[in-house]
Length: 389
Image (cartoon, rainbow, N blue to C red; front, side, top):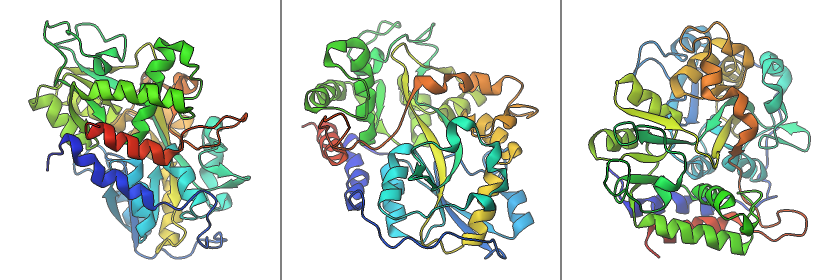
C-alpha cells in the first residue's frame, strides 16, 4: 500500500511506548553456553539485510545457516528504528538489527540482554572501530554484535543531474533543477524523526552561526531552525518515504529525481540498469552503524547465538555489503569476495568512517551543562511538520 505524506504518524507514535531511560524491565541472565538449537529463529531486520536468494539467487546467507543448524529463520522487515523499538517492546522476537538511534533505547529500556562474547568466537575479527562502540557497549557490557555500517546517501537521477548534486540543497529548498524544471513534487525525505538530524547537518554547514556541533544534540534555537527548514521542505516533498521498495518504484515510475536514501535502493536500481546514482554532498551525511541485538526474553536463544556467530562470517559480511552497498563490520570480508570485488569496501566508504554522523537517540542532558531537545519532542514535532503544522 502506498503511503501518503501524513501516514508516518501511525508508525512514529509507537515509539512513545518506549520506557524512559534507566528503566530496567528484568533483563535475563547472560547465557553461559550454547545448547541445541530450538529449530526456529525470528529476526527484525532492515530491508535487504537477511537474504535467502528470493530476490537474487546470488545473494543467500540464510539457506546454508538453516541446513547447518536446523534453525529456520523468520524475518520481520522494519522500515524505521522506531518501528524496531515498538516490535521489540511487543516481544516474541529473538534478534534485531538495530541502528544507533534504537540500540541505546533498547538497552536502557531493558529489552535486550548482555551478549557473552566468549560464545561468539569470531568477535575478535570485528573492526576495531566498532568493537566497543557506545551504541552497543554500556558500562563495559556488550549488548550486541556489529553487523554493517554506511551513510544515508543522496540518490539522484542521472538524466536530470549530468554531474552529481554538490549539496543537499536540492532536496531542502525549492529550485530549478538542471533539466529546467522545478524540484517541487520531485524530491523525497525520510519519514523517521531522526531525519531532523539531516536538517541540522545541512544547517551546520550553511549557517555556522547556529553553532551546531552534534546534529543529535540540539538546543532549542538549533532545533527550531531545523524545524523551520523541514517545514520549508514539506512544500516540495513528493512523499515521506520509509519503505525501500516503494521508494524504488517512486524513482522508477513516479518522477522522483532526488532524495535521501540507502545504498540498497541505489544498488537495486543500478542492477536494473536504470539511470540513478548516489553521492555524499559537501555537507556530509548522517548514517548508521547497525548492531545485531538479542531480546531479553528471546524464545530461541541457542539459535540466536548461532546466528550471532554466523552474522560476522567473512562470506556473509562481504555478500551483504555487495548487496546493500554497506561496509562490512569485519574488515577481512573486504578481500576475496567475488560479489563485493577487490575495491568494493572502498567504493562503499570504508575510509569514510569518521565523516559519517551516526544515528543516535537525542537526549535532554547533552553534556557540558547544555539542555537539549529530548527525542520525544523530535517525534511529536516531526509528526506536526509532516502534517503541515
